[in-house]
Image 1 (tube, rainbow, N blue to C red):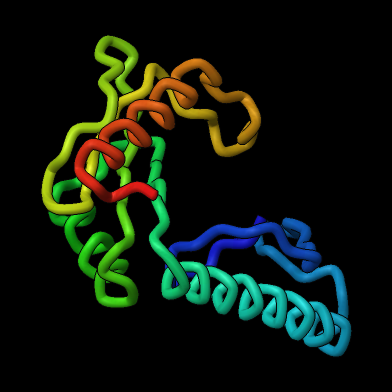
Image 2 (cartoon, helix red, strand yellow):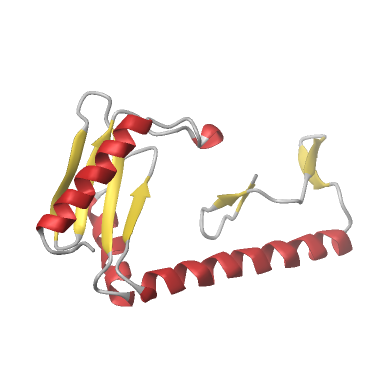
Length: 151
């Protein structure tokens, strides 16, 4: 995993390093790392462009989850930015709360918050609470349909 210190985004990379005498040293030469960087940069730009096309193209429900609390300000900022690109988009913020699983409830127009018993740890992204997610998806569909936001 690499951590982009400018954005705080972690991602898998083909660049490897080894801890030697207390310092991290890259395993490959600058030339090889530049090739890897170029390939990875192109992949990230493809994914960014694909996401932006999806945001702009049609009404979507975007799910934002973090293994920790998402503040109201942060949720509002993400929601505002999604709305700037396409006012029909819906943002659903999901947090873990083992004691209180709650289906989606509206916070603002096209902004919802839900709670699930647990979120998958980052290192095991497929270890999900399937029934909890199924319930959230169905409840979100029902809520959006009732408000005329779906389909």
